[in-house]
Image (cartoon, rainbow, N blue to C red):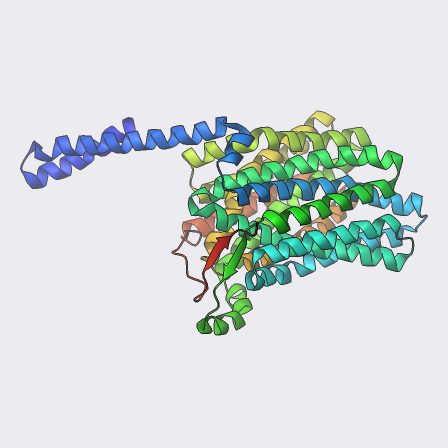
Length: 462
């Protein structure tokens, strides 16, 4: 009510001065109360949605969006039940040399990161569903091949197929989710999406360790069957978003890459956000090396996933009620940098590392929905999947270079405070860069530009 009273008072003074005394004040106070009531109801609805829980909030979306949530849970469940144990299978089960193990694992990462832009461009040209289905089908084949491959060429081929699959469906899924959720609910949809994403990361290794205890081949077969089932479910139930072809659109399609690659603000945003991916990845690099133990490493992953699962919706609701999108981005990046002050100050005890991982998870929960929303905003509704593909490619390159730099730094300085302070500086520097973009008004959402004469309309296939 204080905000409403202030608004009512100032508006009343203006109205009274122009209309001869107090005639405008009652109307202004009424307007202030209405605004305050509207703000209170909006905040209340946000809190109620957060309190509603994951399942209740999920059910508030259309079936297509709910299927995309299930899609991401299953994708991560299948991926993380297999990939963490692939290196051990190659080295111990097949007796491969370390260079060969690195080649097989690197082939997957190269094909995925290198083809994200192509996958996003194809999704914008052909529609989101075909790329999602094709990616899941290809990963079915890739995981199935890993179950029986014995030679290095077959293993590389299977690994390449697995990576290419991710490049096909990842940009398409995010662009589809953004389109289905709509501008008003995009942030909430991506917050839920991240919750399902993290649930898959948490459950996958637990299922994988049980299956791999029997045999790695069984793990591969089960993962392949999961993706096969997901492929069939989406073929049957995921709506198709048809594009109405128009002669005027052909010239614009030829300029698809030029439009995306010339988006200077998007490039600056992507480069600023790359630091967040480098810092987040330290849960898989610097923190496990500092923890020095399987049990401690497992604890890091569990804490990260549980914080995301328990806090994502509440954190997003809090941010929506109090902060703009731009401030959320700056806050998240700043928190990521600040997380590394804990091991810089306290050293390597497990409690310090767990606290660092928890703060990183909170920062990611702040960032992710607004990060995904900003990609759509900066694309202005044009070639959204292509923008997501380019964004993933830029961040993937950043992760590779960042991990290389972190490794060199750790080798050079050991476990002094220096590596942690450098990581902290990366986060704070990215936060400063994002704040500069926000101050210049570059991150403000502009009116969507219709993608030529193409209009997408969802229709159900079954």
